[in-house]
Image (cartoon, rainbow, N blue to C red; front, side, top):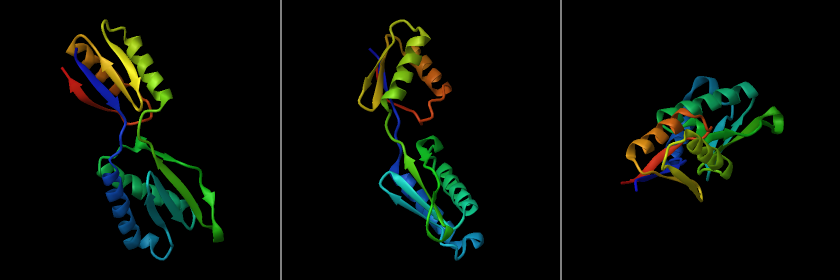
Length: 162
């Protein structure tokens, strides 16, 4: 029986490249000169530091431009609250979300079940959802429905087996 896996992954190498590009741009841009604004990637978190809130918003915009250019979905980035630092500086942490949480998996399974396609079933396997169907066309309909629905996480469809 044909099947495929629904996953939510982030290419950390592309994120690292985007953060490096954003850091270089911040170091050379006139409006960021001598402000102490910086970006740093630690594991699955990006630390943003800026002297003021509007500089922080500009820093986030530069980061997002670089992520989009590197084809990293912005749905994978979740921003924390803005924290006050010393001397009026502000900082924020952006977390990279990888994997499908149990809540998202339940919503995905519910959507697949609500489609009412005969012979199509889905099950959660750790941080992915496996979809099994009798017909390839039904699986393509499931993929189309999942692409159309908004789950606030980037979804990839792989490991297709016929």
